[in-house]
Amino acid sequence: MKRPLNAVFYGNCQIMHLSLILSEHAAFKKAYEIQSLKQIHQLAPEEAEWVYEKAAEADLFVYQPVTDAYGPLATDKVLKYLKSPDIAVSVPVLHFSGYWPETVYIRTPDGKKILTSSFCDYHDLNIMIAYHQGRTVEEFVKKIRTGFYDQEFMEFNASEAIKRLRVREAPLTLKIVDHIEAHWKKERLFYSINHCKNSLFYLLADQLLNLLGIDKITEEVKREEERLAFTKLPVYPELISHFNFGFPNEDIIINRHPYTWPEYVEAYYRFYEGNPGLVSYNLHAFATSGGFYQKRILSLNNFHL
Image (cartoon, rainbow, N blue to C red; front, side, top):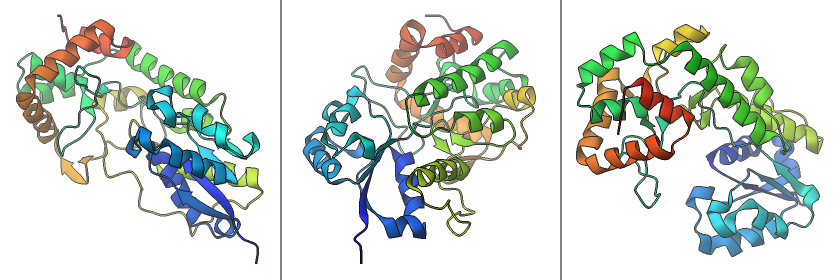
């Protein structure tokens, strides 16, 4: 019996879920044995030699671009160890802010990403500003109903989110942005800025299978339960109204726990009360060196240094 070929998947949690889907596909399992690597954020630079060894053993190397910020784990370093560049298949990193212009990460002055304890590693810039300005939870929730953004900003944020996806995927093997652009208003394609719906994984899997000459994902592999819906960030009512989304505003879910709007805001406020220095530092950073979106949101909230 012919030994299955060695398939290595390298990237973030998205590439892990793509590999899990393919591991349940009978035709792919017959042709390839999947070698699991840690997700990129779980790897230490000292493990680079182990990653190089796995890359050198691969008959198929499916990867997402990993930047130079990861040092020896960056993809341009890892790809040098492949048997041939022809075995590499590149997959886009799915990051989409069209539903959430306000979502940010906050960092310490040394640049380390901060988690909101057991709550959430995403932060809402509007909530952070409201806390800094001394607004109550009730005042913030009331503002949710009247709105934070103007129409021009919402349109620009959405078009730029698509544009950034298109630029990132341009040099890559697999493509997804045309589907996202055509469907993101009709159905909710993401649960947070980097956690997408199962259907996007199936589309990427089918493209890969087509390249390999293997039949598409079967219905038996597709599951009703969404893989990454354990956190569902709230979509602001004004975006739902402006874009006339074809889906309802679902409950807020953070790490599988439901929240009302007041509870959601209160959870952030509790974290900021314990870390007031981080709030001031990050708002200053967004105001002085942040991107257009952060600076525009600060302006819309009448935030001034």
